[in-house]
Image 1: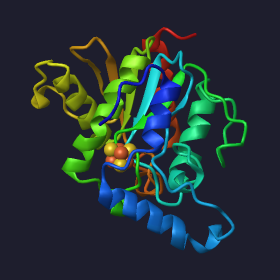
Image 2 (image 1 turned 180 degrees about the vertical axis):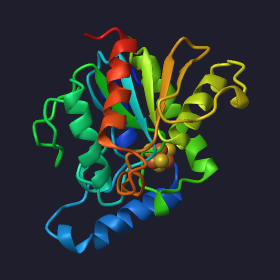
Image 3 (image 1 turned 90 degrees about the vertical axis):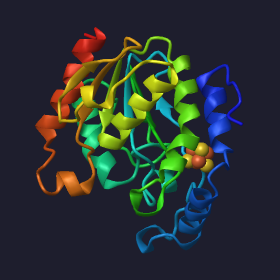
Image 4 (image 1 turned 135 degrees about the vertical axis):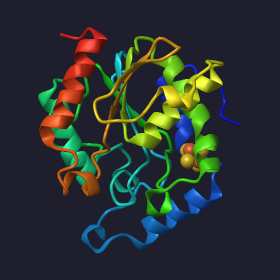
Length: 232
Ligand code: SF4
């Protein structure tokens, strides 16, 4: 069902043509057909969103899911919406991103030392994937982590992303007790696989507009990830 891709490029090609979650595929296609008034001239991506970044990455940024009019429109994670407008300046200041703004797949953005993905790769209604959709998409993350040979640190953007990483550990056979890992902004964990995890509030508008997540808070998370990953 999820194949056995030999490279991150092959993995992304398989993800783009995945149709396993009928509710999500129908939703993404409908959003792409109707569009938002501000984007009527856009040809929406409307497919599962492939991951992106540096194949030699030591740090993985793990998000929740594509935004309906963000990456479901542009075809690149965190590109073209409010969450990305908050995330990329922090990635730029922390030395991971070549530029602070992300507007389209052709905007020239290059990541160094970082790979960006999410636990669900199709935009869900209300930003809420079902538990079954999370489980269905999970094997793509397993392939991805296996292919990121230099990976050391995972920055989990939000509680659901962190739960997704713990579920990955469980699938590997690690005896992870959820109660050992309480989610908090800036918390750090060493997981049974040897990966380090840092948890962060998600840079959603709900968090950033209310001041729950500030720019310095997010920047500090990625600076700490650099340290933990042994990046200069
Ligand atoms: S959410 Fe994941 S598993 Fe489901 S259709 Fe999209 S890519 Fe496939």
